[in-house]
Image (cartoon, rainbow, N blue to C red):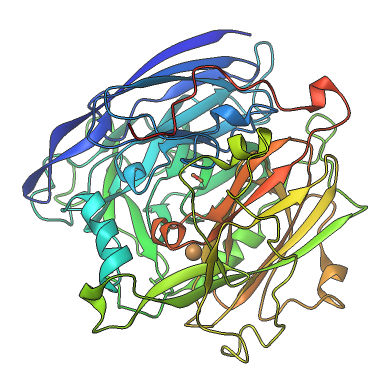
Length: 543
Ligand code: C2O
Ligand code: CU
C-alpha cells in the first residue's frame, strides 16, 4: 500500500458561466476540484490550506475512516472549521471501499464549489469484477449559482423564502449547449468506436436528484457508492445528491455526436422548478461529417419519482464468493425515523410578514450545531453540548403519508444525538411524511455504508413489509433516496466508534436541521476504539 500526498489550496478566484463572472471558493483554482486517485489499501494525506474568507472543513464522502472520526470533516460535528489563513492535514484511510466516492467541503454551503472525485482502484494484483475498460473518465454533476452561495444561505435561514435550487446544473463544471453563453465550453468526451469506457459519475448537486443518460447508448451500472453491483443495463440512471455510480458504456453506435444529458427530478411541491437540462457531448473520433446538433434523448420528467424508485430497486450487490456481504440478521436496535418538512417561527424581524420559515427535521427534531464539535465534547466528557435523547421513533404515530394528522407542523430545535454500543446490529426505517408536503430525501450516514434491505411507498408496515426484505444481495451504499410518500429500510453493524453525522444530503434541508449524530461507543479493545485525538485539530474558539 502507498501513501499519497495532496495539497488543497482553497482560495477565491473568478469563474464565468451563464454570461457572468463571479468570485468563488475553489480548491487549486479548479471546478470541479482535483481527483484523489488511490488503490484500495492506500492512504491519502491531504494538507488543506485555507486562503478563503470563511472557515471551511473537508469531508471524504463514503470513506469509512475506521476508528478515525477526527478526520471525517463535518464542521462542529467532528472538528471545528479551518479558519482563514490556517491549514489542517487530513489522513484518509482507504481500507474498505473500491470504486468511486468524492470529497467536498462540509461547512454551510461551501460544498457547492469545493468538491471533487475520489477514485479507488482495486488493490495491487487484483482486478475489476468486469472486463478491463479501454479508458476511465470522471463525470461530476454539479450546481451553478449566479449569486454567492453564502448569501443564498442567509436567504434560506432568515428571510422565510425558499432558496434558489441553482441557476444551472453542470457536467464537469459546464452547463452545456442549452444554456446561454455556454456552448463554447461544453464538456466533450472523445471516444473511439467499438470500445468500452468506465464512467465514474459523482452527484455533487446541491438540492435535487438528477437523471443521467447518453443518447442512443445503454449504460451498464457496475458499482455504486464504492461497492460493486451485479451489472444492470439501463438507458438512464437516477442519482441523488451524494451518490456515486460506476457505469460502463460501449461505443457501438454510428460515429457521430451524442448528448450526455443530466436533467433534474424535483418532486417537492413548494415552487415549480426550472426544468432545464444540462448537456455534455460524447464525440466519436473518425472520418465523418458531424451533425449540426448532437443526438438528444429525453429522460424521465422532473416529477417522475417512480422512475427513480424503479431504477433504485434494480440494484443488487454482487454477493459472490470474492465479494461477500454480511447483512445483519440479529437486529438489536430498531429505529423508525421520519424525514419531515416543517415550519419554524422565523428568527428575525425581516420576515415577520411571513411569520414562519420552512424547516426540516428527523422525528420532528431539527438539529442545531454547537460552537464546539460533538466528537470532542463526547471524548472529553463535556456537558451542556448535546443531549442523548434523540428518539428511536416519532412521539406520535399517525398516517405519515396522509397529511400531518396530530403531528405538529412545527419542529423542535435541539442537539439530540443517538448513542449506540459497539457491535450493535442496527435497523433503521426512514419514513417520508407529508407534514408540510411530500418530498424525497437523500439520507446519508457518515462513517458507514449500509445495506438497503427494503424500499416502498406509503406507510411502512412492521407486519408485512419486513417479509419482503432483501437479505440476500441488497446494495451497500452510503446515501439512499427516501422517496416522497415512501420509506426505506437499512441495516448495518455499529462497528466504527466515533461521532457520525446522519443527514439529508440536500443542502437546504441540512442547514434547516434534517440531521442527527450517531455516537458509537468504543469496543472492548484498543483496535475497536477511537484513535487518539490529533494534537493539531483546528481550535474551536473564534479568536
Ligand atoms: Cu456528502 Cu455529510 O456529506
Ligand atoms: Cu431532505
